[in-house]
Length: 287
Image 1 (cartoon, one colour):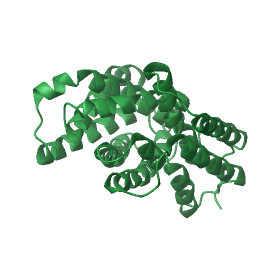
Image 2 (cartoon, helix red, strand yellow):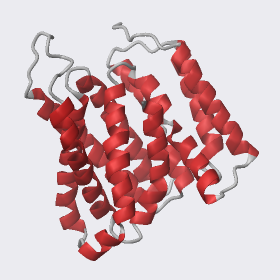
Image 3 (cartoon, one colour):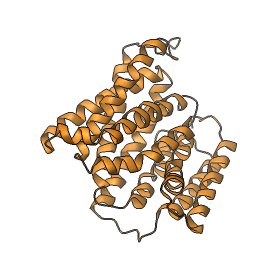
Image 4 (cartoon, one colour):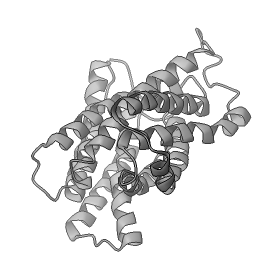
């Protein structure tokens, strides 16, 4: 499911860039996440009745709103930084810098007293090497956009860990739906502060908005929430980093963009890192 999410997100990057040709980044983000939450509503009513943590001590059915809000706030901040940063940096550098959550999450795990095995650290190192070969075609000098995307990676790390925490207790569909509406509502607020939304611009960007709202949000982030119930955040982050691999593959297949030997080698290394992470996939233990 995480690989499917990465595939959907990989195809979404070009839509995000295209959408900003018609509307501002905050307007685009607000509409796509409100659409994502709305798309999920029918599924929530049909499949979102039972929570996996109902039998746990201290279970609070209303806690899903707090959990969804926490995830939504992190998601809004991270996506805003990424969307704005894309205006000032290249897609390759943005993909590489965003993927730094692969390293940040295991480091955060140490502070949360989570034991991360040597095999996972090796997988993280391999994934970063593969990501560098795939994405980086320029010198790594941080610009304004690069800095925003790097901060985005830090915030995404907290979002991934928050999803892992709440998805183990609450129904993933309900959690995702609340997350999207919180993200969308907060984006609407800052949209009216920093931009002047234009209905004609939104209608002109309906294809990018539809894909990123219905597919990237409705499918991708929901698959992330469901899948993270059973995976360590460190392993989940490695699998989700395939987003950049799929983005490159879609560019090659659909847009005719050639992939160099360096880029293909980077993809191979990243797939090897994911296979290695699955081999060393063991439950987290308290120190």
